[in-house]
Amino acid sequence: MGNYSAVTEFLLVGLSQYPELQRFLFVLCLIMYKIILLGNSLLIIISILDPRLHTPMYFFLGNLSFLDICYTSSFIPPMLVMFMSERISISFLGCALQMVISLGLGSTECVLLAVMAYDRYVAICNPLRYPIIMNKVLYMHLAVWSWAIGYMNSLVQTVMTMVLPFCGNNVIDHLTCEILALLKLVCSDISMNVLIMTVASIIILVVPLLLIFVSYIFILSSILRINSAEGRKKAFSTCSAHLTVVILFYGSALFMYTKPKSKNTKVSDEIIGLSYGVITPMLNPIIYSLRNKEVKEAVKKILKRHLHLTKV
Figure 1 (spheres, one colour):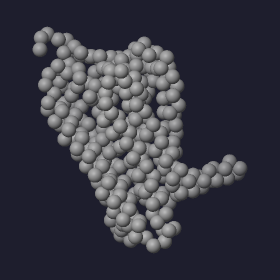
Figure 2: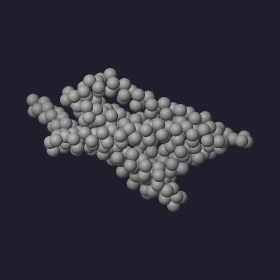
Figure 3: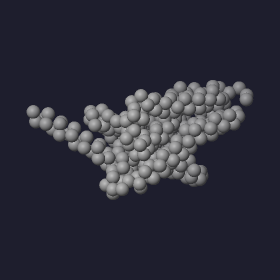
């Protein structure tokens, strides 16, 4: 191992060689971050203010919106500062904190999307028993366990990464403290980390995706058995927004992590990774607002009430 000094900070050099691109991304990310904060905050406020939206579906949707706000807030503000300043360093503790938060929230979203698919399955396939099955105790427990599983995975992987020796290597060739980028700096055996990461990926990514897939097979089967065209349309509209978000989330993730890596495509890889972390949280509230009649009616109701109060 030799006599190596302990790493106290990391240098994030993702796009530091392209100052013009950084300035462009600063403006773009700032605008998108404001849209994320506004859209997701409005969705949370609407689901709280309108009693008609006090259902398991909108409770989970509120969790998803809160998650997206926290997820983007864990890396966009520091990244914006980095884009506009010469200082591209982050402390060891700050890097660990950013990793545990972002990885935990990303893991939680995978589990939460599966929980939301189960909620839609019960609503479509067992509509008469839905209020009994999806009672307050159950959906509260499902939400708590989604967060707990996500953060247990994050804590284990972050701790196991940060206790490894970096042997003085502190230059992260990435925009954020991402676990795969950090493992490249480690100067010891990482086979145990790779094993745990593989198992966690199966539990956090593959199993929820399979549950979502099976849920929608049963949902589609139930929808096709509905006699009236209006009934089929109404049933499909209740889960189309969630299905769109699932395709967007998993589609972008699979594209990002399965596309061939090359030194010549480093800039495009960074931009794709950034888009994956920013575009999906930005589009989620837009998708649920545009494709959901109840949300649109709730927005109109709140706006009418606000206009009435201002006139009075």
